[in-house]
Image (cartoon, rainbow, N blue to C red):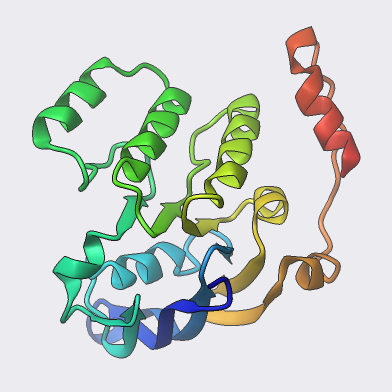
Length: 225
């Protein structure tokens, strides 16, 4: 059922450091994700997006808050929950939990280029047909044409999984997501449908001149914006 809520995050908080070096990186963050949607966490680097995702996955322990995934509490039912999740964390050098150690070693030993790594990482993440796919800063380190290819792949993935994506790239989020949670300095700024929010966000537009004729498809896409 499309309107079914499969992830609930309530009042998540996380502070790192001690004394006068304490920094609250996530501050009372709450949101819900519905079945078969692409939900985006949008914000600048350091906004708290990756820490929020790591708390959802129980890689970082929250100071406060509750997480429920597929009607199961995290971390109480972590083992069962993780069977239903595919993950790509920030950066291209991840260990993929749904594949063996040997497969991970072979993968990283043979791939060339961050674009091919990200494409292969997606294949690894969806190999067990997860109900939820989490993609954290998927575009990191990619050239402009590879970003366009990844964008197309993400749109297609909505047919097989619910997607939770994080990025600081507004254009990417605008093109692929159904709903957006904007987060800055650890706190929620606003949440809404992509259509509702994009019209409220002003950003500069740039004209790119790409000399290679093979880049024309991407140029046409940009010109639509």
